[in-house]
Image (cartoon, rainbow, N blue to C red; front, side, top):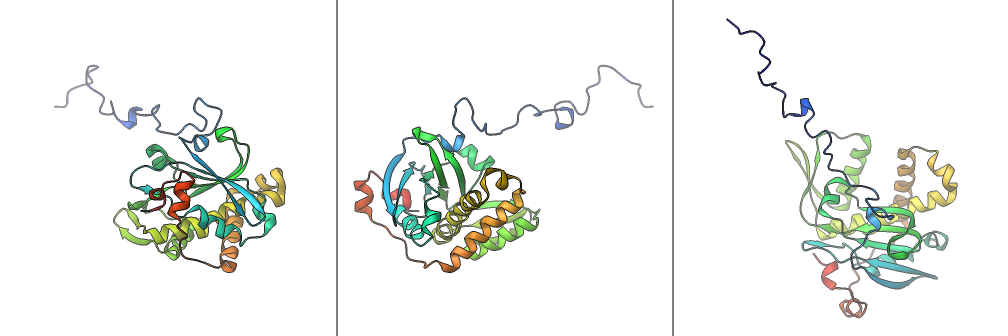
Length: 253
């Protein structure tokens, strides 16, 4: 015979998500935290280098990397790409920022790069492109692939990433060459495409469109620029790097 209701009996959902466990414990990244700058503008001991790209002088802000991480392209690589682009488009960016994400940011805010209208880190103030350091560790996607993710999957495959299907989704196994293709020959152009789009439409016109429409413009800009781009081998000058207080190991996997 089944016993009746007992007020002392423990709720089977106690201590579980069904009863609210973890509801107020979201592991998110505060956009501004307790500072006036966004998390991607908070750089630790960056090195600042000036370089000329065509008729344009740019400021490069390079953050030291953690062990196991590197920047897939050098400053000279970036300059060589930018000099092949229209001068009017080069003029839309003041700073190129190479930054090392924290472990938490790697998990909750992963990005190849970012287009920033007004970068304010380290007392600076102007439009920027941020490129993030990478490691050769495999990374994974879940099984759910929407149309945009399917297109990105194809782009990553074209960049040379090894993509393996698993029971839980997809595993990506990058190489130095595939990371260089993604960051230098696609992400840099993609983020510049966002700046071009913003310049052509102004603030209101840019944000009146959907996120998908803005991303489509940037992808199209990068694809068209790639078609005109003359690719080249990595440009590595350890002596010049050391003279500028840069560590060659920051650019080597």
